[in-house]
Amino acid sequence: MPHIAVPAPVPGIRGLMAAKPASGRRLSELAEQLLRGPSSLTVAERELIAAYVSYLNGTPYCTGSHTAAAAHALGGDYALVRAVQRDPATASVSERMRALLAIAGKVRGNARAVTEQDIAVARAAGADDEAVHDTVLVAAAFCMFNRYVDGLAAITPEDPEVYDGIGATLVADGYLPQGRPSSV
Image 1 (spheres, rainbow, N blue to C red):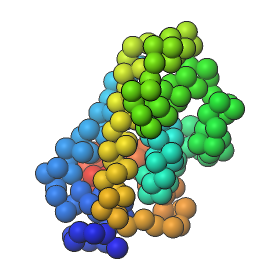
Image 2: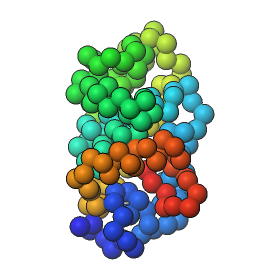
Image 3: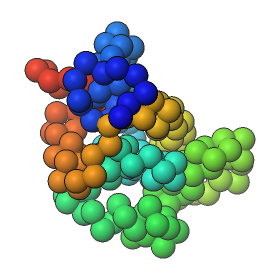
């Protein structure tokens, strides 16, 4: 049960954003820009970062939604997303992605722990400045989104099929789809 009144029993961040539509719209616009806007990172890579950070933060709604979105963006590869969440160092991802996930993990915990060496490793693996920038910004934004959802006790479904549907919709429609409430 959310800590605030929401207009309808809508799960996760969508229900919270419906309580304050003006700020909800801005948050959806931010998510659209970060996860779908121009970037040297693919949609799948950005969703994977969101899923990883949400998992590390222990936010079930965001973890479920972005695990599903990343899996759908990766052609249905839930196993890869879960492997990244367990241990990106052993997951079957590129060295570039592994280095960016290491940066995202540090941003999630103590952003000041990101070092020049971390950036050098990412660059040596093929990450450009835009990829490093977008990794840090997606990781930081998902810490905020996760805390918003957890801090207001958003409705959190337990059925994995709910998250699969959310993930499929996010990949197909993005974060500002016409005709339905915005979602992150």
